[in-house]
Length: 231
Length: 254
Image 1 (cartoon, one colour):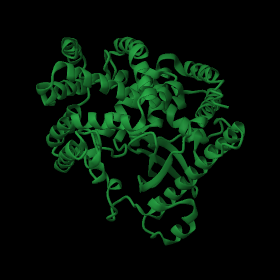
Image 2 (tube, each protein chain N blue to C red):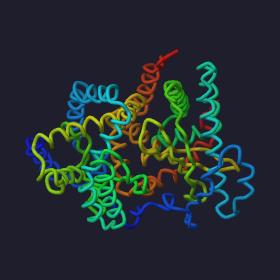
Image 3 (spheres, rainbow over the protein chains, first blue to last red):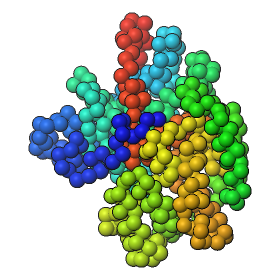
Image 4 (tube, rainbow over the protein chains, first blue to last red):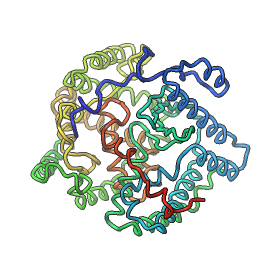
């Protein structure tokens, strides 16, 4: 681990501070779905792309919260809608490949196909398992920042009535072919992508790609019956 | 209770420091079999004691009282945070910690209410492990400590220094008071981490490997005081290209 001077600024980045023209723009702070068109026009051309990414996250998050809060609809219908949203908002194939990393190249075409299928299934099971957990959390967009010429990080704060302090979720968004797609979710500094990558890497190095695929299939079966919950 | 653990901790540290100093291979976890055994032991203890206690705490203690307990623990912790703020050269954050201690210790009824947050002094945490990291000390090999969980030599030393050198309660309070505080802190921490831990366990293929990665990432984030992942390792991942996936042998995904 390097000392923090080069790679990791010890002082909080400007997204924790009032807007003073730092790298992070906080203009999107008050963006809500309703004010989108107005705000999009009013935003300065400066950092336009990162602003657009913030708007994209706002829109996706609002849609997810909308689906989650429609408890009058059937559980199956909501799961199906969330899965559609997931396909639309994220680059699941790229995420799956980045999780496997170098092992992707070593996998046979047949293994790759099975891996992508299992990966999708696992994510879907998680959605199904978590759908009843939504409990009125609010999400606020704090700001967004260009990482490089492809990726943007959008910072959000989640307010949960059961917790004293909000927690941070950063969304890594890739801009390609004129559209935005989520490629990582970082909760309180913990990247889902890295966590999965380390975990899968450990399994592959011990048991090979076939071992990983078996473990994934077993996990999916184990979760086959997500908590039917409350009714 | 904590004193009795010191020799064990020191023994483990001695073992590890004598081992390979930097182990990029083995996932930075050269003692994995040993760690996995301790991990399994910890989970048994957790299931028998800590988890039930934290669930009982969650069910029986009303929300405002939970907040008060968390605030009190935070106020008791403030001196350690303050010292580490200073040692990291973070004078502004040290000022915040001091202000919080003064305000919450008086207006906040001995720390039961977080009045300081109303004044804009938001809580943060520091420990000597982070201080060491700021001054360039590497984390060393991953370690799972009995009862204490995920750690490494740097953070374990940090914990010892914080507990026995920096913490005024170590000098001022009775053993009973300190034990009570340690136990409360353990239950509250377990309660607060509960949902995240359960989620991680439910969604992981290898809970041990997943938790190891999460621990390291959390520590890195804490050391960077909440800055987003900016270490080279994280960015490298996204530079990977999968040109081969565009070729004809790439799987067609429906």
